[in-house]
Amino acid sequence: MFEPPYVAIDRFEAQLKELGHAVISPATVQRAFAVTGQDLAQLAPFWNQLPPDGYLRDGGRYRFRRHGSFVVDEAGMHQVAHRAHWQPLDYNALHGGIERWFEPMAPEAVALPAWSRLITGLAGVASRLKGAQPWFIEAHQFRIDTTDGIGRPTPEGAHRDGVDLVAVFLIGRQGIKGGESRVFEARGPQGQRFTMTEPWTLLLLDDERMIHETTPIQPAAAHGWRDTLVVTLRRGGFQDP
Image (cartoon, rainbow, N blue to C red):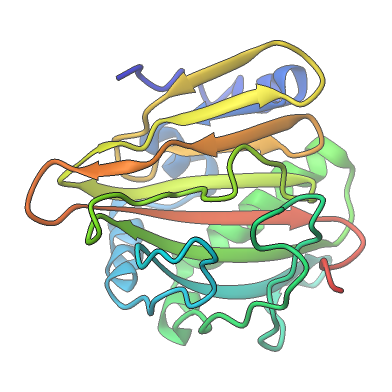
């Protein structure tokens, strides 16, 4: 496995601007978003309560998820009424073009101080990257497991999300092999591959410039899984049909 190319706290936003992506360590996440390890530990148990994703078009049973939508503006962060997740076919050829109504995030998770700090912190990163403005944010809790022998974190393949900033936090992984992160320039030859193994490692992507994917996972024990939090930030409004 290739180790993540961690960037120091005083460099990761500059690298995000220069290269379109940056990976920061769990310790840097804590400093950058003003959270402690104990704060983050309070969020992790909510990944044990995810319902199955009923929209997988490859027939798999390996994905579990919840979804929430938020806005960060001058008044701060607020959660909006539960809504469908929608993507155009241009960005998701497998699952695009349909309204997917996932179960909402647990209110107890959203109420934790760490949650608002992560979301408002990411909005700050987006504003420094793209200019200060309201941000329309979707959060996805994912568990990919190996019940059927293989799990696909990105069944749609290498893709963009049609947003401005994508944040992928690794929450944890257990009893698996694979799950390599791959990021590529959308309009160039450069790319990187690495495997996130430490909980609360963060991959940041300028979605206008980068394509990303995660390779399938396979069991290395009786039951294996990989948990992530994917947060997308978009200017101008949410993606809707």
